[in-house]
View (cartoon, rainbow, N blue to C red):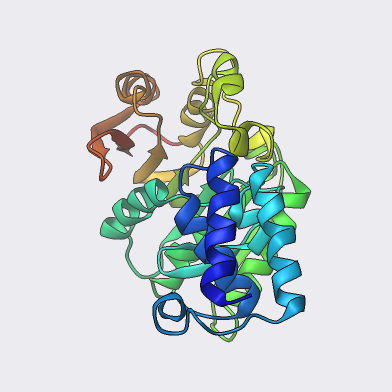
Length: 284
């Protein structure tokens, strides 16, 4: 079977399974199996695919047709121009979250201390450390399995760099000490009752701990905002990723917790995606 024939067969199977991006996923999975690039479909479409690769391709196309996320099959996801390892123990990094990282980078200076709450794969913290100099970072997550993935990403991405970082397991701030210049978080923010309506790739295969924001989706914003003042230097910043309809509520939560200069940033689709603010209260 030729390379192009394999691709068309995979695309057809994924289309039949209701995969919205069937052409893209079929190509990416074929490239993953064969170790090829996107040009091979155009330039070398008539090249024969080995029997082993053909069988392996059919196997992983079947997995994708079961709505297993593509990233769980390949084990990686690109984020901020970097390649992160992922598994079903962490939320798959998404392009929307790059907006959050970009906003923090605007204010991040050499030598700052960063706390990444609900760190998951570590994609936010490690991206910030990769694109800065001399900063110190701590990533916190309640899931030890997620932190294992974060550690693997740190070893791969920060290898050889003299970067001060730590990942610690704990329920929000329970294991945190010291002061920080920036607190950043992409917390679970989906209301519990909404989760059953999500696409199968999310509700069936991504960790519930990283999704469920309790009744109204705001539980973690309240908890983090209430406690952050104890851990932020005066004038420090807090940065949240939010759901598209949560900007007003999260802004009010931050205002009640003593934050000022509260701003909302939209994503590339024009939806509210980030809320950030400055802490000027009397830190304890």
